[in-house]
Every structure is written in structure tokens, then in C-alpha cells.
Length: 395
Image 1: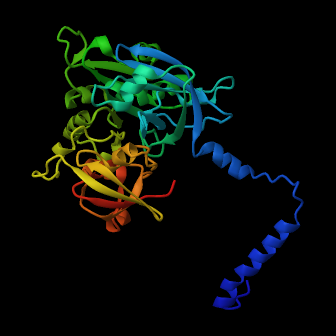
Image 2: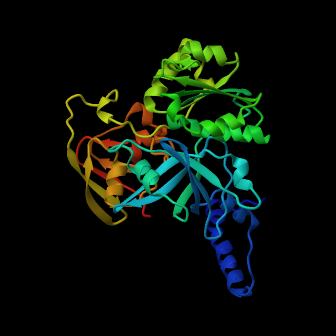
Image 3: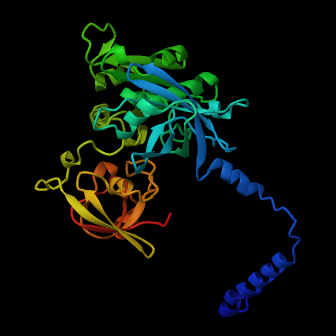
């Protein structure tokens, strides 16, 4: 390769650009340009997928499974067992998103006749499960949504994980393991799966019938009931004793459920001296009460601050509560900002903190080291402690 010198070589790009423009101008305008690589990339990683609800089915007294198919000629992208979908909602003037683990199996999204995926939603507690309550009460066949998928790292990786998987689930945390069980049954996931599933009582076990229909030599489901003394099987919580009873020496442990369960189960796994590289935990959403999180200022009382939102040359001033993430303040003001995991993990809602004090819980701080150094935050896991100014992308 001939080297002409720094400036001649760098400035030579202008000649290439000029020649490229000339070729474009001289080309036949009727020529159809097809880029197969870009087309495959769009199918694997679409910016958005239009979906339509085709079925809603009760799977426990408090939970429903919702079936989606692609809409408007879109194609469902492939996903792995344990990944999640982020759905967009507009409820009472609020623009928001929510992540839901996919409870169907990946092979079902590749069906020839009618590919689909499913989520299973538990009716939220009034005053807490804003979107879950709305979905449970209102969604019906024919409804359409914009979906973003797939997301998450909560899946079996053969180079990292054992072929003996122990799933520790609580409540609606069973959904990703239902996906795994179905894929194993189909023969397209080569692992042995033992599910220790904690529920309050046998009267409200989510996906109970579906899971029992899947049980096989490679899939075992052990129900652990915490509040039903007469239950003849395993009772109490997912303790170290119980985990050790059903685990193989080389098992990889997947944990999914509410945040208090994560903290309890992690301590129990540490009693068994399980290294972190063999523990996989799904993202868990924002804390129910941020004021109870470790490190939150003890003298801080709930209050509302002024949040200045900068988008290019446009500026908005909105209210931001100290007890809610910045992402919620943006949504309530109908300001668009990518929000996917809502747990501080994925970084889709990354924004620049220009000024102000904030609190970020350690359990929800998925920022890179450089982001911490240069004052970038994830809006879904950042709580204002004063008036703040943030800069977000123009959408």
C-alpha cells in the first residue's frame, strides 16, 4: 500500500465521496437496491414490532396469559428462553413501558402457520401494579401494541452454564422457567431443569396446569408452599437445606421473583458456598419503597422537585418526585425516552445528569465505569434528591 503522507491520505476521502456521489447521480433511478445483510439484521433486531393480542387465558385465580402475534406485516424476531419483551402503553395520558418475561418457548415464535409469543401477567396490588392492573382488567383479543424484543441476559449459555439448571422461582417469577421447560420438552434446549417454585398456597399457583403437563425426566417441578400447613409437600421458603436437597454438585442457579426473595435466596446460596459465576438473577424492577434502600439519605422526606429536561435546543420543566425514578417523571409529562428493563440494567434510558443530586440504589446501578465518571445515569433507576437538569436524546 502506498503512503503519500498524513494529510494527502486523510484528505483523499473527499475524492472517494465525490466519485461515489457521481456514480449515484448517474445510476438508473429504476434500479432496486437490495441489501440482504441489512434485511437479516432488521429481522433479528427490529427497532419495534407491531403486535396484536389473539387470546387471553386465566392461568390462576390472579394471573392471565396473553398471546401476541405479529401485526402490520411485521415478523417476530427470535429470542431465547428467559428473555423479555418491553411493551409500550398510553394509559390516562401517561406514556410508559413495562418489561415482561416471555412465558412461551422460542420455537413457538417460529411456527410456520401462526408464530406467537406469550406473557403471563399477575393482577397487581391496587396502588402498586399500575400497568399490570390495567392489563389484567382491560386487555382483550384484537388489541394492538408496539413491542420491543428481545432483551435480557437471563438465558442458558452453554459456554458458561451447567447442563444441570436449578430454577428458584417465586410468584410470577415462574414465567421464564415455563419458557425453558417448553423448549426442553420440544427438544431444542439441551439441559436438565429442576424448578423450585415458591407460592403462598396451592390455590393460586401461576401456570400450574401448564407446568404439570410438561414434567418429564428432564424437567422437574417442586412446589414449595409457605402459608398452608396442611400441604403434604415441601413447605416454607427456598432455604439452603431445600436447595441442596434438589441440586446437583455442578448446578447453575437461575433466580427470578420479587426483590425480597432475591435477597433471601442469595444469602441461602452463599451458605452453600455457591460462587457468583454459578448464580444468574433476572432484573427485578424498581424497589417498592426507595426510602428503605441501603444508602438512601435518612433525613430525606418525600417531596417534589423541579426537573429541567433538555432535548437539543428544546427545554421542558416537569415535576419529579423524590420517591420515583426520573423515568416516571418523564412518562407522566408524556416526554419520550427509551425505557426497557426499568431496573437500571440495560441502559436504554441512559441520559446525562447536568446538575443536581440523585440517589441510585446499588442493586439497580448497571452503569459502565465511564458513565459513572462522566455523570451519565439510567433514568429508570435514578431518584432526585434536589432540583435537577438532565439531557436526553431527541426521539
